[in-house]
Amino acid sequence: MTLTITVLGCNTPYPEPGSPCSGYLVDASGTLILLELGLAVWPELLRHTDPDKLAAIWISHLHADHSGDLLAAYQWAANTKGVPRIPIYGPPGWAARIGAALPAPDGSDQLRRLFDVREHTTREQKVNDVTIRSIAVQHGVPAYGIRLTHLDHTLAYSGDTKLCPELETIAAEAHIFLCEVGATAVGSKNHCTPEDAAHAGASAKRLVLTHLARDLTTTDATWRASGAQVAQAGAVLHCP
Picture (cartoon, helix red, strand yellow):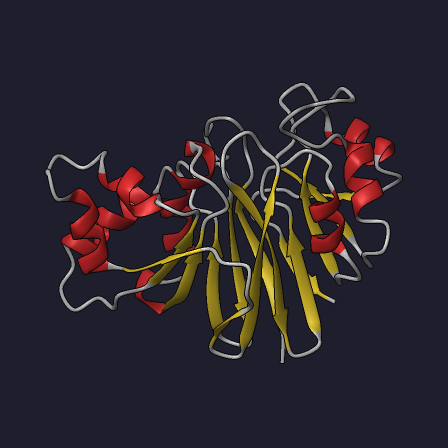
């Protein structure tokens, strides 16, 4: 039994050649769950799997660098015969917001016909033999982190958030804590610094920094977070 995470992309706030925005493909002994579907992630997903093999898609919040390629998923589902209605978990009202970008008055209804639209709740939910728990964090817009458990292995992912008590709950005792570091200065209202990530993940067995601020180098991020690993597009993380 295995739990791996393939980093499809982690760039912010927009994609660059060879560097998509946020997307992480989790493989839990064959159950595939996509965390985030940011700009330019869809083509990278296609390098690794057929989308119809996904058991679920999970979106932390509706900023485009985390959710923009939901429109690519729509285009795929609307133009491909026989595809399953993949469950998509997102913040409350996500289908209405994304549906409003479609050139039709019933965009939200179209999404609901093509996908199993679900919204984050405070209770644990099951995706095959994987347990997911979405936890609200603090980011200026409705945003969530996640604890994903397969057998006795736990992946924690921050989404985008400032340092907050909820982030420590997400990270607690996780085998891998994947934490964004979109800020360089103390006191950010929306993002973590490397020091914040290290503090929140103090009890996690392994800290992996991701979604680095554009003016934050890998070397500086690693040093400031006491030697934590930094995610790179294409990397595969093994849990534990």
